Amino acid sequence: MLTAAEAERFFMRALAAHEEERRRAGAPQLGFSAYLWDGLGGTWGGSLAQTSAWEAMQAIRHVVRKAPRADLAAYLHLGLRLSGENQVPVGA
Image (cartoon, rainbow, N blue to C red; front, top):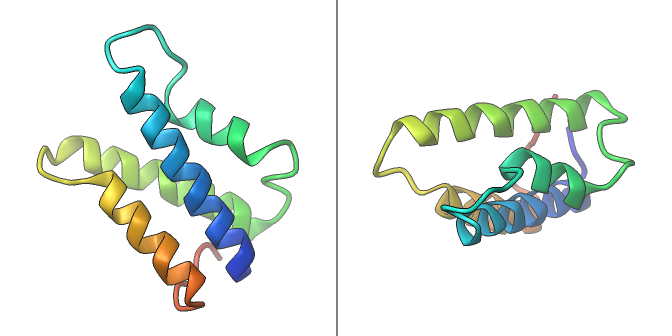
């Protein structure tokens, strides 16, 4: 499981990546995953919990893209709020 600090950082970076992708909509871009990876830096992915969080985020994005009314930003804000309250387990 990610620590509260890791989870908070992960959700903050995911929200920033989502906002960057939306800002660049219609223009050539790298996309959410690239922005998230860049935002997390080279130290991310060194644990099973971090890898699990990454894979879970990719799955969530896939599901959200299939549901037109789903709001990824709302889910990310909720995850960020709960991680700050130490109430959300993220990853394995």
